[in-house]
Length: 229
Image 1 (cartoon, rainbow, N blue to C red):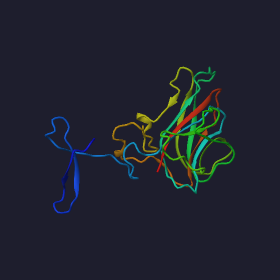
Image 2: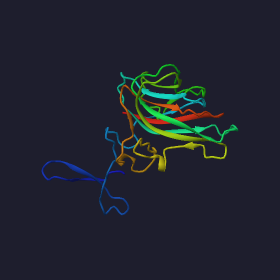
Image 3: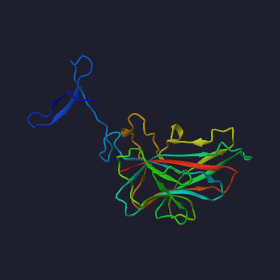
Image 4: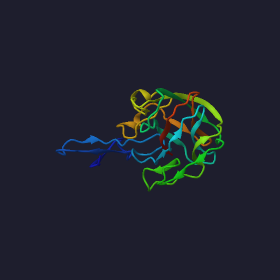
């Protein structure tokens, strides 16, 4: 909202309050500009996506880890984490795959590292939503098909159906937005005033995904969205 005038809020102190008068211009309204706890105005937080390639279903496989290296100057706020199965492939299995998510406290072992701003679809790729935002430092990584992880805490579990007739995905909407890990849609009105925290990754922390003990004939992909402050 644009500001037409300012009014004195504390006589003699010089403090002012922004107002706006839409329509007739005869009535003044207070102007509020949403901001985050980190001090970013609404829609100004540097935002990044991570799209992972299809990962084959293998029992107990570590599908990915997003890690914020100990030398990072950023804190990562995970806004969205979405998994889906390859529904363009017929599967003989009518099973739901279990996936456990963990906070990690050190870089994982093994795996394939991500690319940056790449057009290739064979590896995890991190991209900026706004090309004028800073590129991420090398210590912020996303790897796929890991050998092992260093577990700090078990965060939550999700199941993804592996059958052609199911809506084979789960995402950050409605029932999935629970306090165990609050993933919030970026375009939701009033998002800056939500009381629950997102999943926060400080330097030296990450989030990793491990498949359960059951496998299927399908592959799975993952999408993450986070801000760096």
